[in-house]
Image 1 (cartoon, rainbow, N blue to C red):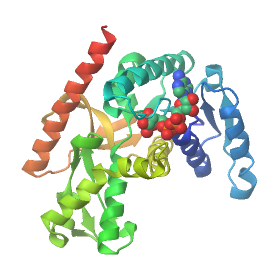
Image 2: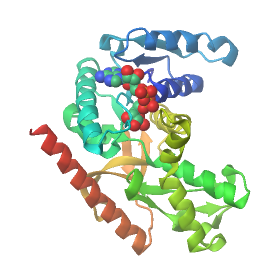
Image 3: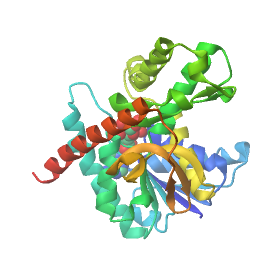
Image 4: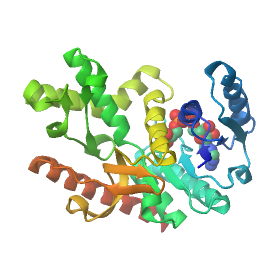
Length: 312
Ligand code: APR
């Protein structure tokens, strides 16, 4: 594989492009946006850091989808973040139009890319990109679970004053309210989290995690998080490009796994050259399994909203 495209050269897109470039695993990272000059300027800036950072991946900034031709992996970050006064449905409508258009353009120039969606609302946008692309379901996926797990790991590490590298944390389900933390599989230095912290302490950290994005938005006043989100998307790209089949929590299509069918949902999955190469079924507790089923029903209801918009 030698080409990755990032659509949207905003905060999330440009940081994702930079991180992928710094891995130095592909020849080119193409960044495209509707704003003229923006991807070109950012690409030039990143290219001028190559000498210092010692990576050879070349950034190409463009407003023309022709330059995305033959992409192996495409990350879709194009879209609006939610603004004050904007309802969730308003955001859904605006971003659905953007993601639909972007997906059509990408498929004009790349036959069989893996597509990673990060635009919110995530589950609906991933479903939409999959439907519009007509690609096999395993080739389209969304990023949310790695970010939530990483936030959870950070809060656990802070609470216990340990390094984040000592922590394994996992969240499944959807982004936001229907996030499903999996404390039974979280560990600190190999010890189960449930043996270290009380249920109420764990619940407090879960609450902080699901509120993680909103807390940052509140502090920044304008714009939303992008450092940890970009790391999360970039690591998915790396596993696909390197065909390393690493297991990450990602928004993947379910066909019976965890007793759930026909929905994109956050589950552990292996990522390799064919995108999602396997949805991995971890042993969950009964309450965790039930929470995942509840999350799948919530996502299905949200997909219905999307279908209603499309049929208007
Ligand atoms: N094609 C390409 N780029 C587009 C399009 C389009 N049709 N529409 C908008 N964009 C670009 C904008 O010009 C902007 O540069 O998408 C970029 C979005 O960047 P930011 O506003 O900085 O938003 P960002 O923080 O990067 O978030 C992007 O990720 O986390 C989600 O909710 C967030 O949906 C949002 C997305």
